[in-house]
Length: 299
Ligand code: NDP
Image 1: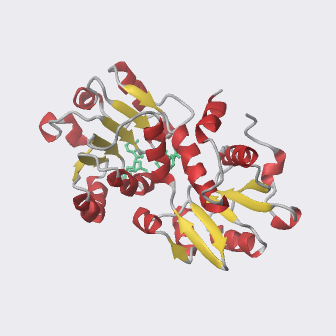
Image 2: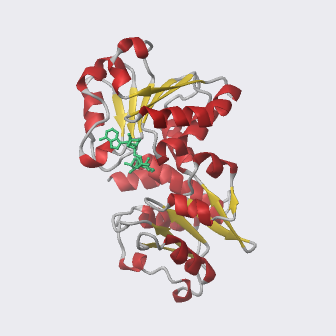
């Protein structure tokens, strides 16, 4: 699959009078795979649309997005660092977006700008698509930034037995526990916070995990959030280790592989969050095949 086409850089709806125009906005955006993914979904479902990429200057997202929608843009995906701006811009937020505290999908409907967050659904769809059971699982979620917060709601709704959030700054993990305490209770999930340092102490995580999700940005700089001395406590045989970073075998994935765990990067999450955005925009009755697109991206 060709990831970049020169047409991707065009996002002015007036240039495509016969097509519905969509875009992904981020900074930087040049390496985004979203245009290629949405192009394939449009081909699969025979939708007449154009999807481009745009890079608003830092501090200029709201102005750029307003101009895009005023010119007739139908919908937008939003990535780092604009998800909070997108949330502020949306006039109507889904419950999911409110819980996630960030918006990655915008669309115009009946004159109002709607905002949703499909990252969590994307993660859950990818895990289930890989045959990973979430219900009743013991889950360790590493990180407490935007990505971790975005996946908390959809993960809890799958009713795992336990969800432990561990972050470098433990106060941020505590905040997430506070924020999602009620939802966890309503789904009968045991929710708790740890620091990354706590993970080195087996008495603080006595039971084995089934699923370890790395939602930190450590992989981007070839680091892992897990110290060598924590690995024996975390990666027992049968564990599935998932890194949201994609496009490489991260340090975290290598640590897990060396201890016999099964691993995955986050490319499937990216494709599945895009699929959920596509269905919001084009209608749930449209037929697309995200797993086929994922396979094409991997070859
Ligand atoms: P944020 O900047 O909001 O949060 C970063 C998180 O990573 C914080 O918890 C931070 O800890 C932690 N962290 C960063 N560096 C290290 C390190 N060296 N060691 C330990 N912890 C570290 O980023 P996001 O939450 O938005 O994104 C996190 C990752 O998820 C990114 O790599 C992003 O690419 C990926 N992502 C992938 C998606 C997909 O579709 N596959 C979708 C969304 C995100 P602290 O709080 O202590 O600073």
